[in-house]
Length: 449
Image (tube, rainbow, N blue to C red; front, side, top):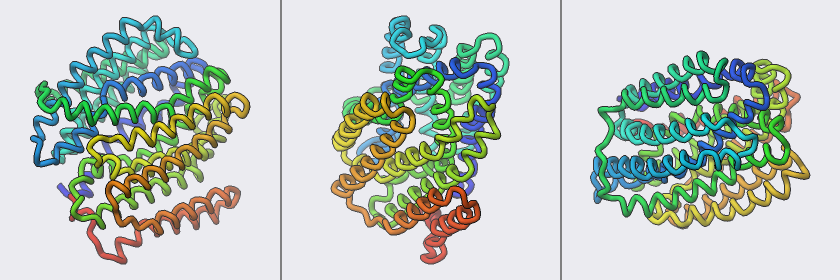
C-alpha cells in the first residue's frame, strides 16, 4: 500500500476516534455543567499520568528495538505485551484498592465509581496499544482504522445513553465497554505473553516512563493546580481550549503514526531523515497558525456563552502544543541513545521550571501567567532536545525552512485584526511547506514507504 493511501486511512481512523468526542462537546457540556465538566477533566488528567506509568515507555521501546537485527520483532511485541499485562495489572489493582484515598487527594472530589472505571479503562487501553502498534509496524492501516472507529462510535453511543442518568460515571462506563469491544476486534493480533527482552525493555522503558512523568508535570499537572488554586470554574475553559488545541494537532498524527516507527530505519540516509523531520515541524507551525486564525471564532460559535472564555485562551495554548510537537520531532538523537538518560536530564530541568510555574506564577498571575510560563518552558525543551540530539546523532537539518515558518506564524499573531493579511501569510506558509517537493523533485514517500 502506498504512503498516500495509508495516511488517508490512518486519518480516517484518527478523525473518527478523536473528533467524535469533540463533536459531542456541546451535548456533554450542557449535561454536565461547568463544575462536573471540570471533574471529568480531572479524571482524564489522572488517567493520563497513570497511563504513562502503565505503558512504561513500551511503545517507544517496540519502535526502537523491533527494527534492530539483534532482536526478533515478534518477541519484542510479546515482551511488551507481557510487561503491560503483568505490570499494568499490578498497578491497576493497587489503584483500585486505594480508590478512596486517591479520591480524597484529587481536587474537586470526582465520583468514586468514575475513578474506579478510569483505572480499568486505562489498563484496557494499554493492552490494546500493543496490537495497535503491531498493525502500524506491519503497515495494516485498514484494521487499525476499523478498531479505532468501532471504539469511538460505540463510546459515543454509550455516552449519549448513559450521561443523562449517570453523569461523569456514565462516560467511563461507556469507555470501558468500548475498550472491551476494541480488544475483541484486536484479539487475533494480540501477541503472546513473554518476557524474553524484559531487561532491556525495562531499562529503556524506565527512562521513557520517567521522562513521561516529568513531561506530565510540565504539561498536564497544571490542570490539577488550576482546580486547586483558582477553582473548578477556571479549569473548565482552560481544559476546553487545551482539548481543541490538541485536537487540531491530530492533523499531524497520521504523519506521526507513519513516521515514528520508520525514522530509525533511515539512519543511513541522514538527509532524508532530517528533511522529513523538519517537514513535520513545519506542519506543527501550520496547525498552530490555523488554530490561531479560526479557533476563537469556532469556540464562540460551538459552545454556550458560559464556556466562551476558552476562545480567549486557545491561541496561546496552540503555541504551547506546537512547541511540544516540535520538541518531540527534534529529539531523535536522544531516543537513539540506548539508555535514554539524556531525555530524563532535559525533562528534569523542565520539571523544575514547571514546579516554579505552578507554585509561584499561577497563584498571583492566574491562567495567563501559567500559560505564558508553559510556553517559555516548552521553548527551552525545544532548544535542549535539539542541542543534545545533535550531540548524539548529528543530522543536517534545513533549519532555515523552520525559521521562516516561525516568522510567518509570528506575523499571523501580530496581524490578528487583519484577516486578509493573516490569510496571505497562511498561504505563504503552506507554499513554504510544499515548495521543496517541486524544487528538489525528491519523492519522500516512495523512498520511505
